[in-house]
Image (cartoon, rainbow, N blue to C red; front, top):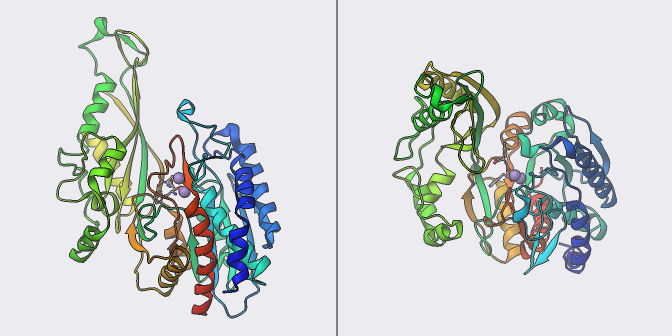
Length: 458
Ligand code: BES
Ligand code: MN
Ligand code: MN
């Protein structure tokens, strides 16, 4: 590679941080209507940044929700086309009082940059903008053709993205997709992720009566929705952590002995993991290790509960309603729609007639897994070696990026998950952060990645 590319990356570090700080300062919280204007402003900032680094045809494309930002550089005839995907929207910041520094003011402490979006995904997508810039400005061009799309609705389940992809198939045509929106195995252990879980998300609402009731006058006469909700939820899993929804495991791809052996060889310290989480004891499906449980087995989780009196003191009341947000993480080859149907039938069966039950499907996404013997994954491994001086380990992840399955089905394109986060970076939580060695190392590794993909040819 032209040495000027890496040199320019190493000498531009403070400018990169200044720019990332401005990107992060725009509170593009996709879930909150009061931030819709900020999310738009963020898309505009990004489009200006993309033009400034030398991308062409940069456009903000409207969707039914927050816009997609597109740009390309297609001047490498005969070279593969890489589609870069990332998301510029971020999660809400609550609980705000638990942040050590303000969430939208990027603050560096101990070589880590703290802010909402630092790792998920503003910092990670910015890695590619800077690597692309270095090639375009210092290397005389990119060794690949590039198409870049950034969406503003990933954190709310990408409600408009599949349609967008179907509507813009020609503009998105590519040989491979590159995404940096996942953690590496741990700091100092760069990795390539070859599997993601899928998701099926629901809200369930129970109503017992038209209004809250005096629990003395009416206690004993009617069902208590809070209690019924607890009973219903308790029937979703047994004590060994197995999901009891009939048919739930039918399509689960079993772990092979070889995979189990490979997971065991990873430098995973279960005791330290438990300590870092502050959990008195780890818990999960019997018969599986922690990595197997989080990467390769499906789960049923309660994400939130709401019912009755939760203020200070005591109030004798039977709540009229109870609500739960629940979600299931899915693994190959479970299908989110099929699982949603199984859940709906089961919850209707186990809920007693004494309450009214409403089940609402929220978002969902397919699980994903790729073979490791593909040329792009091997190019990524070489790039990590060149950028970090170490060969990568191969991981799966428990999180979901539903669009990865859509890229495969609609564009027939494989994805390389080239993530530079670490598992302890507090994504979705207070004090989200990004390790700066990984940020700068990621830019260098990405610059090499394009070179390595270019060598594969068409
Ligand atoms: N970057 C994450 C996905 C992720 C997390 C990948 C951990 C690998 C490991 C992404 O922004 C995210 O949070 N996705 C959501 C998807 C959902 C809203 C459909 C998730 O996993 O909950
Ligand atoms: Mn993300
Ligand atoms: Mn996220």
